[in-house]
Image (tube, rainbow, N blue to C red; front, side, top):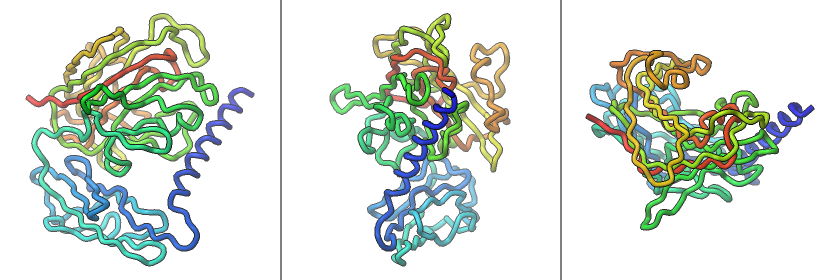
Length: 357
């Protein structure tokens, strides 16, 4: 009975999230919304920048790519609108390409898409976490919902309580991200806070696999040798499993980077940089973690938890390949996927930086 009630509550909460997402553009009469919300081209070297005010989209592309034969793999537009040209249609992006979005009421907006050379040694936008935007009664990291590479599970957690990934003002315009593992009695025992590249989706979450409700990763083509991060960590007092049973040891934070090459449904891991630790760190500390290229082996200390995830379609790839995506994850409880951890564990992160030799 308890499991049945839990699943019912999760479905109810997810349905509310879906409803909230759909009604934003609903109105009486025909819709006049004709925006492009996301635009991606396979092999792009970084994130797309969408400027709503100017109606422009800028996409960085690596060296050696034939710009005359590119087709977008993703074009997300306003509800009830149509776009021309469409997804999968080859265009010559050596010059500006105009995309026309027609709203339900027939009004048309033209969007200018420009492909530019990628900068060497790329970094991720807002990797100092100084920019936050408001969503209802909580904050999300980034310039806006359409211009951010960072996601959290705040939307799901905030339905039944307060968001657990929040900005912390350090003064002088410097902000950090604070993550707290919280009690979530209406859904599960606890909810770990996570900050990641990607987005929290609107699909129904799986009670046994909360990761299924997250699209991890953002386009990226760099080959960094390491990453640096300023962090603090205070593990909670009582380390327990999903049923509230005490466990030996203590909670740990997760901080990691995965470099992937994606082609269609195939996800190949190229590089791994992973830090998992439960030591109390009260003062801001700069951490540098090596990114290892190629398959991890049993001799690597992180092998047990950092191996590829075949259940998510991931396998090992050629370590010499150029990545197409980067996954960055911060979590206040490393085993939060399994609802295991300590309520009250707190992780702060600031000034994430990719290191190049």
